[in-house]
Amino acid sequence: MATTSYNSNQQNDQANSKSGRREFLKAGATISAALLAAPALATSNSNGNKEPGASTLSNASTKERTIGSGKWAMKVSALGLGCMGMSYHRSFIPEKKYMITLIRKAVELGVNLFDTAEAYGPWTNEVLVGEALQPVRKQIQICTKFGFNIQNNQLSGLNSKPEQIRKVVENSLKNLRTDYIDLLYQHRVDPNVPIEEVAGTVQQLIKEGKVKHFGLSEANEANIRKAHAVQPLTALQSEYSLMTREPEKDVIPVCEELGIGFIPYSPLSRAFLSGYINQNTTYNPANDNRPSLPRYQPDAIKANWVMIDTLAEFGNQRGLTPAQVALAWLLAYKPFIVPIPGTTKLAHLQENLWAADYEFTQEELKTLTAKLSAIKVVGARYTGVQAEQTKK
Ligand SMILES: NC(=O)c1ccc[n+]([C@@H]2O[C@H](COP(=O)([O-])OP(=O)(O)OC[C@H]3O[C@@H](n4cnc5c(N)ncnc54)[C@H](OP(=O)(O)O)[C@@H]3O)[C@@H](O)[C@H]2O)c1
Image (cartoon, rainbow, N blue to C red):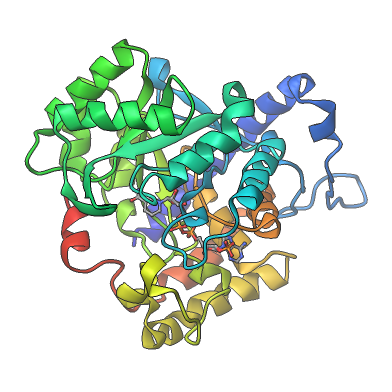
């Protein structure tokens, strides 16, 4: 891992994020009084200056990032909310009314980027997100995805043919109770449909006003370049966390070069980085992909626990949980990174949002990164067809 380049980029990134923060504070008058009344806790020294590394707890609304460039830019909260686990792949499915409350609470807390996909459920997650966000539609931005065939409520292979994209978009608009999708991703690159054709189809949908911005998920550098040449991309979404650092090699650099935002999915490595799951955790295999993934097997969990110990050691001295350190580290990597942790719990939502308030000093980031980078992660993130689909 390129620890050196990471650290050398860090100064600029932090300077950028600090000036962004100043800009946002200037615009503070536009924030509702209710949001400004949120808890604020700053650590100051005797001169009233903020201590290096101190955190200021506030709403996510006080943090804003830009993904994409020029006409294709979106201003978003520093962290979005991944909604998938409220209906799909995370074992239990909580009662819908509680998830609607949670999503609306996230809006109150300043989150304006919500992530779903037709594949989650399928459809039930879009339906949930649509119902939850309908009353606040104009204040927030919804991201959804196309790219699979769905038969008998099961995903059955990839399909990004133009007619399929159009069909999925019409259905997503209904599910989401809206007449436009803020950010439409191709979920996985379809080797049977040239990426230029996919980009051209989304471009048409943008012209028709049904879609505002275009994104890809798990696409490789070559496909990012090809798609971007047809219809500029606003965001690239891929798995990225302290357990999955591969995007640092080529995908994040190409996003930086082309001015594309980067959205880490599973930024807590599906709960592992919070320390909330361990080798004894049991899952509902009918609604959880973790039992099928090597990294969540008991031996891998035990072998990788040193990651949690390292995050806890750093966080314990600073009043941070492992999840907060893991998210703050991603945010510190580049200013165009916007993680979308998923949760079904208000306490976890608030905890995750507060991660955006932590500012590392250069020294602590360097030391922490060196320790984290020295850990050899055990267990692949995907296997078989799923692994193949993330190499395109
Ligand atoms: N593009 C793609 O192919 C793709 C693939 C997967 C996911 N995604 C998107 O990324 C989003 C997030 O990914 P993910 O759900 O796979 O993984 P994640 O965000 O890394 O982890 C979510 C899990 O962590 C737990 N969690 C969250 N915050 C916590 C905290 N502070 N303390 C303890 N546990 C915590 C959640 O459980 P609780 O409910 O108990 O908090 C949940 O089980 C999804 O919702 C989806 O929108 C995209």
